[in-house]
Structures are given as C-alpha cells and as structure tokens.
Image 1 (cartoon, one colour):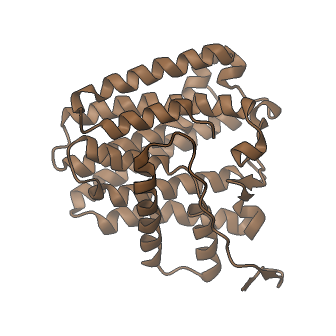
Image 2 (cartoon, one colour):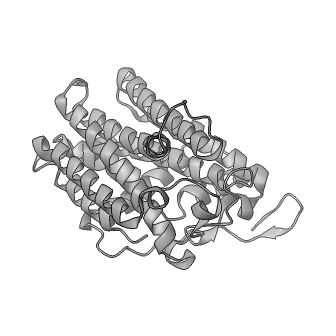
Length: 315
C-alpha cells in the first residue's frame, strides 16, 4: 500500500478492463491483450518513482478502446506486413492518447471526475501527480519509439509522425476550449478544424505510423497516402459518433460524464447539424474510408471491419 502526499493510506491501483462492446470485431479480443502487454513491457524498461509509475499505469492500463494501437497494427497488416512490426508505434500512440485524457480531465480543462467508469487520474492521485503523469507519458512515447526502432532513420520518421499528430491534437484542444480561430470561418468549418486536429490528427498518425513500420524503407509507397485518407475520414467519423453518444447515452453507459459538451456550451455536430444530418455525415465518411482501402484488399479487411464498428458503436 502506498500513501498520499498528506500521509493517508492509498489502496493499490485497481486496473479493470472494460467488457467487450456489442458488435466488436473479433480481432479486438486478439490484439487488445497484446497491446496491454506491450505497454506493460515498455514501461517496465524505464526507471520511474513508484507513485509516478502507479499513476501512469493507472492512466494507460485502466481500460479503453485501444483504437489508436489497433489502427497502427491493422494499418501494418493492410500493407501486407507482420503487424508486430507496429508494436512500438501502438504503445507510443496509446501513451500519447492517455496523456491527453489525463490532462483533458484536469480542473483547468474539462474538470472531469470519471473516466472509463473509474476516478480520473487527478482525482485518484492528486492534481500535481495528474499533471506529471501526463508529462511522463508524453516523453515516454518518444523513448519507446527510439529504443525499439530497428534503425535510426525509421525512428526519426516515426517520431516526426507522432510529433505532428500530437501537435495537431493539442491545437485542436486549444480551438475547442480557448478559441482563436482564423477569421471568416463558418460554424461547420470551425467544427472541422477542431476535430480534424483534436481527434483526427492522432488517429491519422496511428495509421501512418503502422503503415511506415510495415513498408519501411518504402516511405513513398501509395498505400501510405491511401491510409492517410482512411485515417482522416475515420477520425472525423469517430468524433461525430462521439458527439452523438454524448447526447444519446447516459453517464453509466459511457463510463464518463454524459452531456458535458452541451453543458459547456461547446460546438458539436448534433448541435450544429442535428442528429439525423450527423448520421448522414457518418455514412458519408464511412464510404470515403472504405474507398480508400480498396487498393489494399484483402489485407485491409481488419480496417474495413473496424470502420464499420466505429460507425455504429454505442460507447
């Protein structure tokens, strides 16, 4: 048992996996445990203070869809390579995703107390440790890539892709919470700018990193452009579905606070387009994603199945 900064006893971290969602593709059950084991193995290689390690493990191993690692692995498969070549990319993108969630939940940001049905990291460990755990996951993601890549050129390219996705994600969060949009944009253009960055940038980076891991050193292969188009479409589609779930599902169903975007006065797809038109947009983006995968069939079957599941998910 550990103690808090104030000397109070703290219970050991209770890391509980989420139950499978209805309609999940079969490969999710196959790959998700491998992602978790790869994350555990990666973290074990680094020396961290005990409480920091506890907070990082709580943040990154406490369940979740593992969407971004799955996209990296399945993109590697889609280019005809062994998806294990993308293991370090999968770990790195999930560390960045977990960092973003921990910081998004902080009092200065969304001020959330619930994530995946559990107390958020800053609630469980204190605000200072929440900030530091996020910081640690950010830097560890790049250490994982540089330590695991088979050559320095690939390590540099993967780090550049991840940095671009991370910067885009942060820029999107700024637009979403603090504004500062370029002048002259319509409300729909505001939404697209937010979510192509906040949600889409890291999703697209996941696809590109998995593809590069499988194609290297053929970094100019046309499959990379196709998977970029897939990632762009799926990233925006994922956010629209997320917005729909926020207005249609309960806190208990989602495992996080429902209706928070409306309460915060944020611009959302259902708020701007309405529910019916938002679903039309989901279908349009789903078609774009499938079209992008056509040159890679049948190797891209996993990405096609994942797109279908993401379009109709309920949590």
